[in-house]
Each structure stands twice: as C-alpha cells, then as structure tokens.
Length: 112
Figure (cartoon, rainbow, N blue to C red):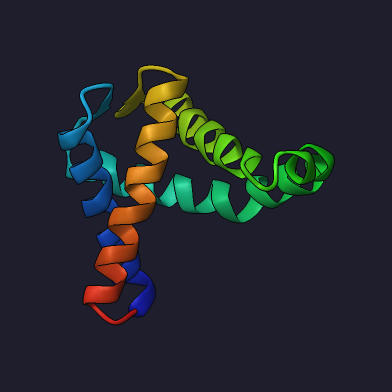
C-alpha cells in the first residue's frame, strides 16, 4: 500500500514540476503515472551503474557530478516516453532538482 502511495505522490510531483517549469511537459495524469514508474525504475537500475562508472569524476567534483547524473536520467526518461518531454539538459537539471524537492516534501507531509 505504501508503494502505491509513493508512486501516486511521485506522479503528482511530476505534474507539479511540469506546471512550474515550461521546458517540461506531461500530457496528463496517466502519462505522469507512467513517467513516475519509469523514473523510479531508471533510478533503481541505471543510476547506480552510472554512479559506479563515474566515481573518479564524482570524487574530483566533490559529488557535484551526481547532479549531472540525476539530470541525465531525468532527461533520458523524457526522451523515451511519449507523454513526458524535457526540452533540454538545463530543463532536466532544474526538473530533477525540483522533482527531488517536491517528492521529499510530499513524503515528509505523508510521513513516508
């Protein structure tokens, strides 16, 4: 039950990001649900691989390269889905940051 609530809250957060940033578009709530699921899967599978592969540059940049990895994963999700679009890298960076903030706030409100 908690997993479904997190999934719904992530979809709502994605809709909020699309509303706040003009470079990110979501076709509707169904597309937001699919995009939230794909983002979760990419963050669980692809992101750890990218983190391990980029350990040297992450150490050199004192961890700031992790922001780039977050943006690339967000941008990749926007490129493979038809109902979720990200206009470019900088929109992906802003969207990934805002998405993280909103999901964190929603998780703390609902005590998840």
